[in-house]
Amino acid sequence: MSMILSASVVRVRDGLPLSASTDYDQSTGVQECRKYFKMLSKKLSQLPDRCTLKTGHYNINFISSLGVSYMMLCTENYPSVLAFCFLDELQKEFITTYNMMKTNTAVRPYCFIEFDNFIQRTKQRYNNTRSLSTKMNLADMQTEIKLRPPYQISLSELGSANGFAHLSAAEYKGTGKISAAPHQRLEPVTLPGIVSFVLSLLCGALNLIRGFHAIESLLQCYLFVYYTGWRNAKSFLTFGLICLCNMYLYELRNLWQLFFHVTVGAFSTLQIRLRQPQGKSPDYNV
Image (cartoon, rainbow, N blue to C red; front, side, top):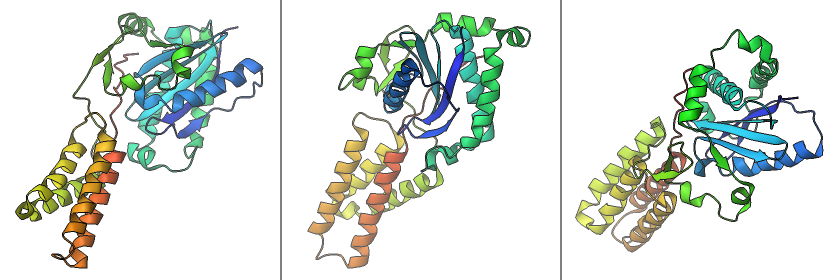
């Protein structure tokens, strides 16, 4: 029998589970798929925005958008078109119900557990395909799947030590291949991010007389605005240089000046770390 077994909502940045349906199936195959769920959730930021993992008798499908991923486990014979329609419906409801700022700042797992009610209701509808046939037009989704099929993840790729590391600065085109996207968009700017950007500019202006010391603050502004390879590593290296330069200028500045520059550097580094690449919003039209 083809059916959806479970679904979950996960934050792309760090794999934090935000909500999930209750799964009562304790079979060996389902238990093994839960392990794959966890492994995938840790790699979401490195994966394309629409993927499928086939694990024998079960398939794991997911889509990612605006920093959140929607994942589901179904039997191998469940129609792919219905699977991605189901995920698209979860995505639309979640975006409508919750402020994306809350998902970015959530610290506890399953802090949106009340969304489970919608997941359960939607799962029941999609497991009763007769009721869906009169309510949905699947032609658009079928066309979308044909034009841009989900990326097929192999178990060998998932289990490799550094699998998908080459996808972190790439854009999925849906043809089973990955093409470079050097200008990947970042998540929307938040108010703390704007404050850190302005303070970094201020520090750069104050350090113009120091020459090289001003470059560090301006580099932090650049890293905050644009996506580059090794972005997080560069931000931590820049913060280290800020600390070293302030140690060098210890005799020329008072403690409050040193504290201000180091604090701004730390705050800007944190905002660079929090502002992650933005997931490509699916262009489903169901």
